[in-house]
Image 1 (cartoon, rainbow, N blue to C red):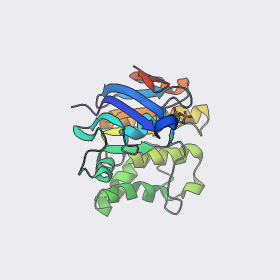
Image 2 (image 1 turned 30 degrees about the horizontal axis):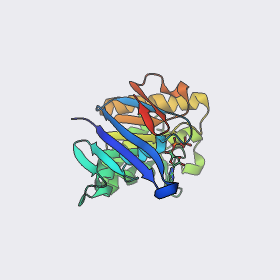
Image 3 (image 1 turned 90 degrees about the vertical axis):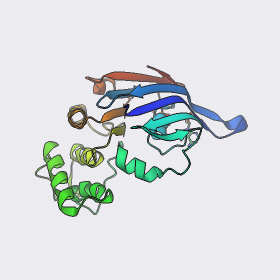
Length: 226
Ligand SMILES: Nc1ncnc2c1ncn2[C@@H]1O[C@H](COP(=O)(O)OP(=O)(O)OP(=O)(O)O)[C@@H](O)[C@H]1O
């Protein structure tokens, strides 16, 4: 089974004279464990592609299948619990870490597991294990304000991976970091995703960050060149 299947995906924002086609007729498949980078100039449609797969932006046309579940087919699939699919199958990492400021690093990861109905004890064990594997064993009890940019982004990765999602979607995850920290974050993300057998799709402007990726999608004016 594919992690992601996209067939003739089109996203048009607005109507009539002001309509903007952000994604035009995109079709591709991503295997579990595959690392895909999405490159392209500003405004080319990269974020729209990611948020359409991430069940945030409703596609105007076409089909999106995540881990065998058809989530959109000419619009959202009726009767589908989108939030649940998002929680169970997807992990998100954004440019800003989006950690909850009044929870510690450990609690920020645990909350993702508890929302997915993991018992507290098991959530704690898994969160600790993930933070240790991201070299954050000494930061369990720090609040986001007491973490460096690279550390905060690694906590965000731990949170995104906590439920072993089939698909990890990342939008410029290293944009706020210097090159060395960026490379470090990216290589840890790749390592964990491969271990988990999760597909990763990462939007980036930075060609230096896509070393070791399996495929690069170039997005240009809403068209995807594989
Ligand atoms: N909510 C929206 N309403 C209307 N137009 C939008 C909306 N979101 C994006 N667009 C338009 O769709 C096109 C693609 O935008 P998108 O943000 O997907 O590109 P991007 O490649 O991610 O850009 P950037 O690298 O600057 O983030 C752009 O022309 C943008 O102006």
